[in-house]
Length: 179
Image 1 (cartoon, rainbow, N blue to C red):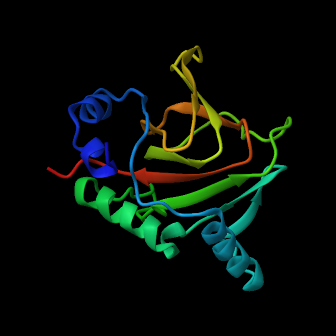
Image 2: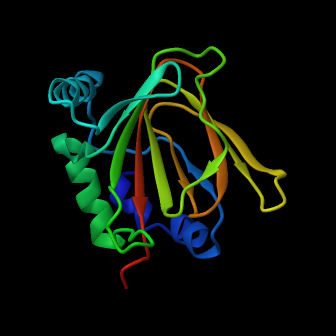
């Protein structure tokens, strides 16, 4: 299923409306490469831009990922269906971040956290494990994501992402559905 059809599928809309996390397998989306990710990270480092930054022990993240044309296409599709997320201070959140990890040893996962916005996370290369928690901190879902897999995680839902192999991923935050 392609990304736009998935966003409009009853399965996705049910998960979104009921605010429960959902995995989607083998999603067809505009592909981008490690080289494109490294190019914007390199650009950020050369310009001392805070967008490209070390993240945890063995990885990095880059904000403003729409500099990659394929990611801009993905965000354009998302923006036809959903509003951008506004932070509590009224600023608009960055709609797309790239996460990369080169190692799978201890320390290649982030802390348990919750994003205020709804999140769609696409596993572009490599593999990761997503663990999502219920409000009582029991595990709601724990699944491996392979290349082309995607997870929807409702805003304010606790979760943690661990690298299982060197990987790169696209994380997109978004707001409410456009009617």
